[in-house]
Length: 183
Image 1 (spheres, rainbow, N blue to C red):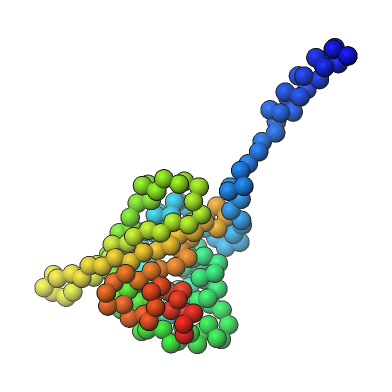
Image 2: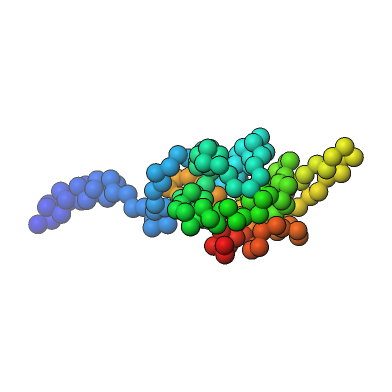
């Protein structure tokens, strides 16, 4: 009997070494859309860099939304591209930049670093964005902050909402999602 236990001990150790247990919080779902590599702050900065390179006033066109697709969450993308009801909501949006609290939109954007966020397993992270817009020839610039909510979909970080923090926001609600839902 004792010999059988000794014979099973190496086998039990071998099986135990081959077994790997993943914690539940690592299960972050899947994403069928393309991704942008990087952490939440890098993806948010890349999104704003794209927006600055190709400024858009009012609702984005289908071609522009296709470019934004790797940066946007499934839910936000669906709201922006969905049925006629959603299109009517988009038509009723303010004529300015819907991804910023200033109608004219920014000419520069600097996303705060996510390196100070202690929970590396977080599924959503709000990040402040310092925005500014040059005002003509006199060199004056308007400065404001907004906040982007970055969420994890699969292995990707994507933008899920924009909280308008600027004082003179043209949007009737505090966030992009609320603005789309209220209309």
